[in-house]
Structures are given as C-alpha cells and as structure tokens.
Image (cartoon, rainbow, N blue to C red; front, side):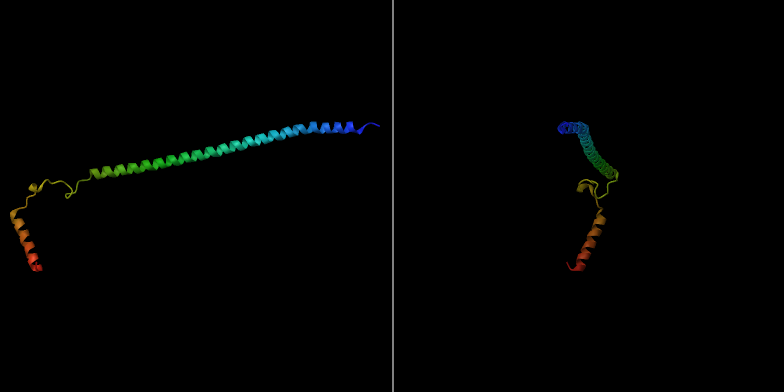
Length: 118
C-alpha cells in the first residue's frame, strides 16, 4: 500500500500552483481598477477646474460690458449740449435787465403784496 500523504501533498501543490496565476490576475485587475478610478477622479477635478475658469471668464466679460456701457453713457452726456441753467454766465455785472422792465416787475410784486395785505 502506498502512502496517501504524498498524493494529497502533490494535489495541494498542484492546486496552489494553479491558484497563483488567479491570485496574481486578481491583484493586477485590482490595480487596473485603482488606476481607472484615479483617472476618473482626475478627470472630474479637471472638469471642475475648467468650469470654474469658464465662470470667471464669463464674469470678466460681463464686467467689461458694463464698463463699456458706462463709458458710452458718460461720453454721450459729455456731448449733450449744456442746459442754460447749468451754463456759466459770468458774475452779476454780466446780467443786465432793462430799467423799464425792472420797474414793471417791481410794480407787479408790490401790487400782489398790497392785495394780500402785507
């Protein structure tokens, strides 16, 4: 009768030899999955960074447009003719009212005050 132990040992060794590539293949697969997950995470970060950059550029463009509108408004107001009450006319010596007109205005004011009892 032959001993059974060597056959069992041989069978165990054969199973171990056959299982080793499977274990190595599982480790490689896990490594590849880890690499893919890292790449996906980097792509997500890159996408967020690009979106942030686009938002910043969009805000900058809106600011530039608003500044241009304000410049155009200022230039348009600079080109508008000055209204008479805002234009400088000089000192009081430059304002001349004819004596007859001044006397007539003075008489009307006195008549209104007399009528109101003042």
